[in-house]
Length: 162
Image (cartoon, rainbow, N blue to C red; front, side, top):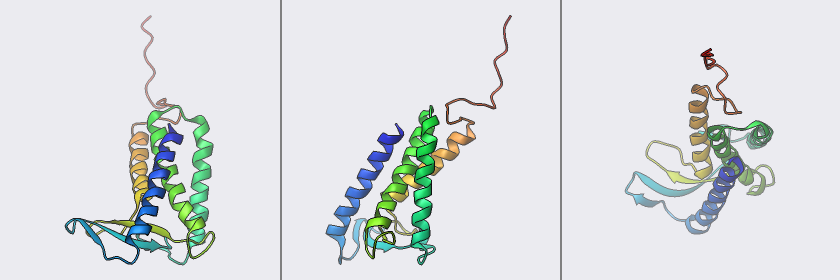
């Protein structure tokens, strides 16, 4: 499940960015729902909210570390919730990592393509959305006390009726 979710997120992100770059480059914002939803092509060298724009290589290394951690953790997954959550995080991290590795201005210092604009919010992309939704799902699964293996280690043991 983790690989399927990650593959879907990566494909959706890469395809949407290719379409956006080919259709929106040099164009003014496209109003989809008035000013509530606009499509606008931007390139972000930093992290969320354009933080650390001069630290692209650091964010590339962090994203690579996240990918490695999730892939290692995947060996112990037996929980559907964790699989979906980590698949979303993995797909989002890889989607933006592909930009950082292969896009201009150069290898491993590329700028991430962002294109979805909501009012009073920074421009983002599908990979960013997957990371946020995956993070929320991680919090919900963890708050429910579900382990990677699908068990609840802190749950009370059933009482032996004998």
